[in-house]
Length: 283
Length: 158
Length: 125
Image (tube, rainbow over all chains, first blue to last red; front, side):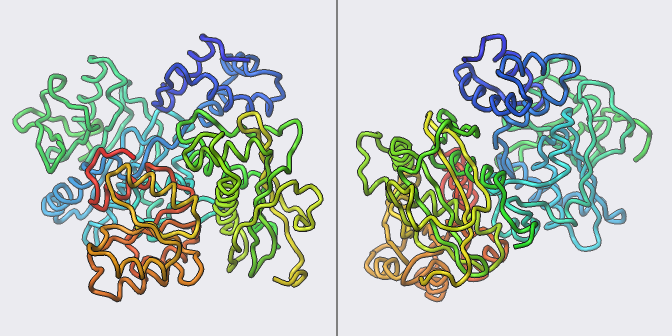
């Protein structure tokens, strides 16, 4: 009844690609427990049969349901806190001063996953921008499954317990059945699009802030370089890039300079290096 | 109760899975498997009464073995160290937490009573009411059951 | 301070916070908690408070504590099954600083305590 090594490999490879989840060996019985109900629902006798079906070209829906069944509540709101503190304490005040007449901000959450990061960013902007300012957040991810979840903006009680201050919870979320849904004003400010960071980007506007957290680690150096270069071309010259806690542009792309802010680092385009203004030339 | 306000088996599943992930299976080693067991058990039934805008019971039922495992997991002790009082406290709290979450799906306002734990509850008069929904699962190879019963208003004295 | 009428819940919370190097004082309801507070030499940094308890519930306890300047240094965190939007608003309006909905994972408590500055970043329950 146990999961065979190659079956576990298929599943762990799938969730790693689609949801950046790492399944350590030793978790075979957990995976099996989660997949058995899926197999039964599909009218199949065993997980083996279900996985065979999922691996076929027409098994997209099966693969999506596997990812969904194995996605645990790994992410939390305000993940690692420091970048969000830096955003509130340094980046927003600076940009408010710099963007004076325009009074708008555009932020990109470049590995938006189930949506907690872009919605956190929207909440922070709503709370901290002066009245009369508009803002938009773009969330992109490679997984259509994740994008669908993010667009729904609904989270379980366990998920909203994680790192979201209660005052912000009551202000920006409403109850829907047993779940909590991001309130309309916040949802309106966030849009989602499928994007593969490792491939050439479609036409995109430029951004004031980009969050690219904990996704570069999955790429090799060449791909990292390409991603950072493309992102730099979409970042305003005085814009900011935030990476994951253990990540850096150093040694990969010297078009960025690192600025230590509070207990974290942020990156901005190095002045003196020509930065093409957006893929379509839109400023 | 209108259709939109009635909790469903799926709601119970979602609540139970969160309760298990929080208290009984924090490391993912002892998952609650959402498959009906071969045979249900009413060795131990813990329940909380709901009253106010809605009247009924939220119940957690399992085998004696499962109740000891649950108490052990909840209270951080070995299954062989668990006393009857421990089982009552642990199962009572499970019913309380599950009940509280079910309450938020019911018409407002409602309040929860104190949990009660009954043993060998097969023909227990306490368990009367119309079943609204249920969720059956297997945990550590043992049957686990969560259900919601609606009682007629003003039927019983408190 | 852990205030809950359920022995099981007090045990769970005690395990989590003593693992974070807090000393723990328990009480079974709001009235008992006020009595114990009056006896303590040092005001606790943190109180984890259930809502539904006999004698004096969590909301009443929060209201009482917030009315007393002596306890101004105490962070008040509700830990309760009450999960309706309106209930959370009531608790925050009464003066609770934070709110955790049951069921909660140990990480949820840790996250909130880090946010409140009561434990350092990177702490583990």
